[in-house]
Image: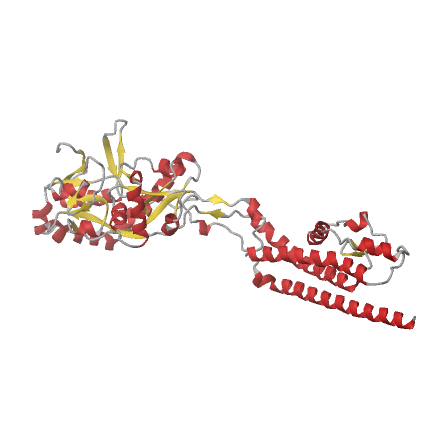
Length: 492
């Protein structure tokens, strides 16, 4: 074992499995009987490392380990896993590399076997084998929160519908309030059963109805609840009785304009009320989830959570090296906040749940963390953003111009992939779908859409038509009263 490195010696048998492909003569010269130093770091599910309480490496497992173990048995070579002192895969800046990449260039290891992503800066310094896997890069975030039921009360209608409904109510309340006031003040006649003192009735009519009472009257019609308006408790002395419309008491004497307004509002109230009652139940009973962050673009505009990545990883390198686009913005944030470039990624849950950091990793690694956290806590606390922002290919790393890559390793990886063996191992190690990792978009949701103006435009057009007809009726009453008054004056 080389000083400064921890290692794990492969203990698997070196016999060739029965039924495997024959070992060619040139392959024997390259690998048969050799002992390889294989650099690795833990990146689940590619490499899973078990340690004792002192941190000593006890066992290596994982998807990539199965490939190494298969090749060792087939080609009868031994191997030893070697970890870098800083536990990083490595990055290259100005042709200077660290981590496993630097160890490979310096000849301290023979190859790299882990979740090694192919990047441009690494490609200039080392050789890659045939890429045996492709893994999207996603964000590990807190589990989406349910929308508040208080907000669900407003969900049946869109914002523009609520605005128009409030405006319509205000306009109708003012029209109703002034309709009786103007008619009683301008029309020179007394009503049946009212006081004989016309001047006294005009003095009372100079005070228009209270706006708040008219709003409550319109609301009572909308919610189908009987509301006794101010006219019941404080009837004006020149009103003799009440007319009942939709269960609400309407004072007489306001004329046709007032009655048209009330009739149109009662009709629209049936449409609005029934539409709301039909939709509100589904919005309240079926939960709605709101992801903290949907994509990388959301993160650049979000100040509550900060982007974090393991230092010198492939994701970190791509962000730091980017010159334009969202990657460049994230790279600038990493330079401004070096604490988000993590030297050690020992507890993903703590960073995301308690420190409010969003971790960028392989999607498979994020799903692995979510699965392990669900097993330990029994709850859904972590989630992976559904929209990947990058995708990297995974392969083995070898020194430049290595004959192992050219004549042996890539050929074997292609054969394993084409034969379906890689897919079999992947199914064994990839995290299985569970309730915490299932995309929010696949969870049961209501089929009821928010009602927009496209659905309720006819109702609001009817309200406008009602107001115009009411104004026309009021104008007709003025003309009729003027003619009646003129005939009375000429006859005298």
